[in-house]
Length: 267
Image 1 (cartoon, one colour):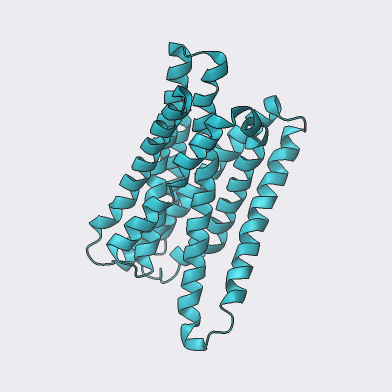
Image 2 (image 1 turned 45 degrees about the vertical axis):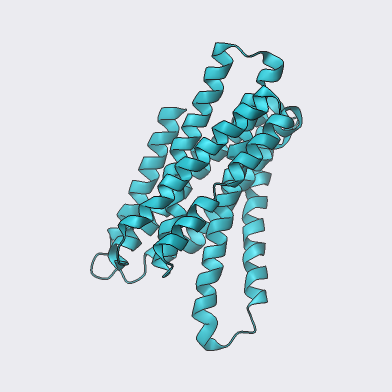
């Protein structure tokens, strides 16, 4: 393993660790409080909506302008639509596979579908983020191991790592809301970030080839996240909100603001 690939692996293990820290916030819920969990579910939706633009679509458009032979708007739009279609198709396949269950199991399976889509969308989002870190470190093989190049790659890894903290919570807390134990919610939440070290190593090894498909991959992940946030998380967090109708809504606003702050501040 050459030096650039090793650094990419270490950096993406660090970004995964921050995801695990975010997922660990579920430990603060000793007993599921419906009102608090609705607020956090809204927070997760806000995080996903903000991340889909500042972490994914915006860098996809910028990279497509430089690296792609196609117009940037076409690459971003096609990737976004393909990502949304992929999640819709995945939902239909999962629903079809469980369609023979009886009415008593219907609600349980509906929850399972939602959980599968949530984990899949965050995992898809983490793949291009891992590739970005891998490409940043892998490019030093050609550009040289200067202090400036190293600091640039480290800054990207730190930025993505900090963004991963609320994303880890965005998986584990909805799982807790669905009745999963704190341990299982944490394990599934941190698992969504395990793809980043794998993608980071691949990105560092195939830096030239990955750069050409990265804009599409980023847009694809954005489409997947938006579909899940709008179709699953937002309607779910708004249920049973008669007494405090703005509780979950403020969670969405807070999640969006936190993710936007991290993305814009860290570049």
